[in-house]
Length: 118
Image 1: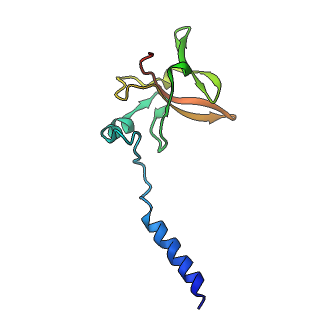
Image 2: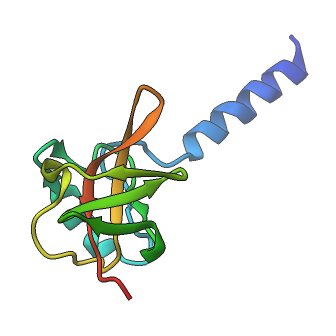
Image 3: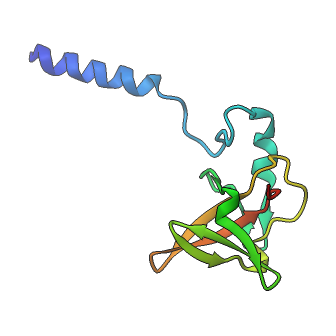
C-alpha cells in the first residue's frame, strides 16, 4: 500500500465534502440575505436575470442616459442598454446593477436595473 497516496486521497475527499453545496440559489448580497428571493425573481424582456451569476454593481460614473435610453460602461466600453433589458419595478437594493453576457467578445446587458444617481 502506498501510504502517502491514500493519505492525499483522504485529504482531497475530506476537502471536497467540506465545500458548500453548489446550486441555483446563491447569495447576491451577503450582507442582505433577505433580498435573495427578490434577486431570483428579477427578469427583463430577455429572461431571468439570475442565472446563477451575480449582478455587477455599477458606479454612478459608469451609467447614464442618452437620447432617452440608458447606457452603461462595461469593461471600459460604453454600451447602449436595450429597452427589453431594463428590469421594471422598484430597485430594493438601491444601487445600479447589470447582469452582463458576452456577444462576439463584447459585454452586453442581459438585465439592467438603474439606481439613483447621486
